[in-house]
Amino acid sequence: MTELAAPGLAPSMRSGRRFTSQTSALLLMLPPALVLFTLFVALPLFDAAYYSLFKWDGYGTPTDFIGLDNFKQALGHAVFWQAVRNTLIVLAVSVFVQLPVALGLALLIYEKTPANTLFRLIFFLPFILAEVASGLIWSFVFDGNTGVAAALFHALGMEPVFILADRHWAFAAITLVIVWKYFGFHMMIYIAALQGVPKEMLEAARLEGGGRWAIVRHVQVPMIASAIGVSVFFSIVGSLQLFDVVIPLTNGGPSNSTHTIVTYLYTFGLTRTRIGFGSAVGVMLFVTAVAVAVLYQRQISKGGRS
Amino acid sequence: MNAFRFLPALGKAVVLLLFTGFVLGPLTVAVFGGFKSNGELRVNPFGIPQQWDFEFYAAMLGDPAFWRYMGNSLIISLSTVFLTLIVSAAAAYVFAQIRFLGSRMMQAYLLAGLVFPFATAILPLFIKVRDLGLLDSYWAVILPQTAFGLSLSIMLFKTFFEQLPKDLFEAAHVEGCGYVRFFWQFTLPLSTPILATVGVFVFVQSWNNFLLPLVVINSRELFTWPLGMMQFRGEYLAEWNRTLAFISLTILPAVAFFIVAQKYIVAGLTGGAVKG
Image (cartoon, rainbow over all chains, first blue to last red; front, top):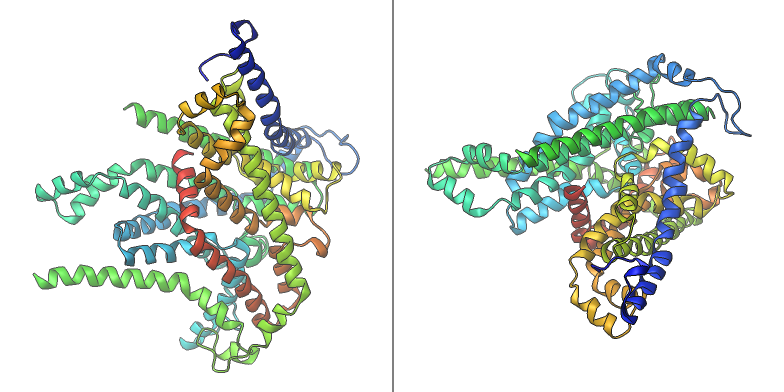
């Protein structure tokens, strides 16, 4: 495998045979991945950039060139900005609520005991359930007529509130479902990292008289800084592509107040067959995601060097 | 001293039980809800059913549409897993075993799929699938799902293949075994842990996928279960108990699968997370 697959470098029969074998492997095993990826991942991205410059309903070929008008329209649309704001809210909740919760729980149960394993399984469970099923369950919980929320309000002697139909509460309710669904995933990232912290370091800190809290703050958290980075990165990527959970809960309503970028793209691009417009939103989403990934990579390599 | 030891332990137990309730509460409510009449659901939404009514679960289990949705999801998920494993393992094997011009470039190209959300290209993808004449077929879901799963799977496979002993291949090569045959006869059988990890991971993603089937599938005959469930919810708006029975019947196999396969799920996620 250290030989280069170049025909001039085949002095003996054996390397000649190896070259033939390598070539047939290359020709047989690589194209399926390249073709599938090009056809369904790479080309659609280029298409998105192209379509975004046209006013196009998806039928025939795009001819109505309008330059950057689709982008201008989106940027001038209040609902688009509401979707951006909602995405930022999800991100803020992920970083300032979900992350500390996940980290705290990870610190409580990272050691390998049977009880901890059980709790780990339970907390991780929502992550593998389908977003649609989770959203539907919670939309029952929040239901103003028959839901748990209704009973709660009733017990408090208050008029039931239809949380998901209330502009002020609907998105807060969605963020609660998001925390429910994803905190276990982040907890698992932290647990994997905490288990990698050498036991001797903790022992040494303890011998030096460090209390539990001091050890957490000055040894464990700094040691898993990269895992925290990973978790934040996943929070950003996750909030950018949030869709499934929102549809069963509010479908973007009431009066378009709970859209995320992807539900916005779906509602105003696809269901209204404005392919050009939706593509423009997709392009902006793509640029954001790539920018985040590049910043993250840069942050990692900086951390690695220092 | 005793109080100092006792209090943190108690606090820990309280916190863990609170979160357990937070996680399991809604799930229990859903399972119980499927046993309740709508009248009872109104007055007793989250308690144990006073009257266990099996009618709604039985109705779901006797509904051919329910089984068709589940069957469609199963066919699509298994095909996606099979295709993803073959295609990405083959590519990763080439990258791990053979040095050739352009190898790094192709890897960078294929791994680029890791950085952006699937949804960015959903509209052009819809057009592409339509122009290929695949709209409203299993392939409309299977092929894009496979393509979008390639980046992560190739990365996981390549890391694993690079750790396999090299002398094995040298020995096999002397015996006249070529690259392709070696892949089938030795690499794949030695790779069951990573095949299982990637397979389970891809399966769960496909099984739960909603956006792609929503966009490319129209006819109810081909609905996957998330689409069927949303459709069902729309039809029985006033009867939450039927929807809750539907949800519970899809959750129970997911939980069972999770308990059996959790080792691989966790490995795939944290492996992908840490390296990605």
